Image 1: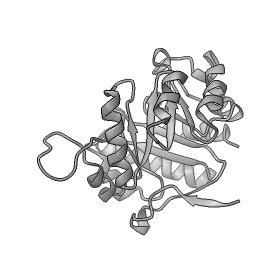
Image 2: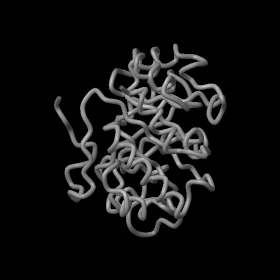
Image 3: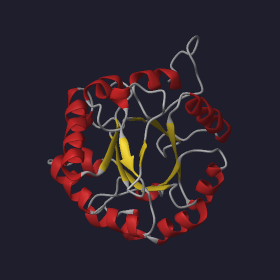
Image 4: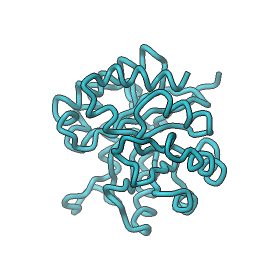
Length: 240
């Protein structure tokens, strides 16, 4: 099976991560959960590395901005995503997150416009441009398929469709409304759709894969678990 680099050609070799075509990626957003910041962020990222190696499933992590450099330094065999990026370079940009700095840390992608950090549409466009210029992969979050279709015109790598009412809940998008997934794949495009909101187990992943999604985005299902390693192993079963 053909392989491709998930990172950019300019990245140091230690940050290269090879994923196989037509396989799903499971991306855990650490947010700022107390169980996933500081040293706990590093421990959790290492668990992702371990399970990725054991299962040959493509796991990725999105730690807090305060932890992202340390995570890239200690976990170089899985992709690390930033939870945000700004249209900013080096210079007078107080409080901003420059794409070039993220790329320099070894970050390979960014999440934009999460429902917990919604952005003006014009700003999303400029952030995408900035991230692209730095060789970062881009996931734009959309609250529904219609919004996702619109965001595709901004030229991201993926659209993450996440119904906001299901985020952090007990019922996943795969269970509550699987038609959203199939509709997204049809209208946004195969190979472009990641789904999230309530994803927690192998069956959620299996349904998403069956309906054509290229990956899943989740958070609390892993970060709040008393045994995240067991959760990740279970999620991996849904890819097989």
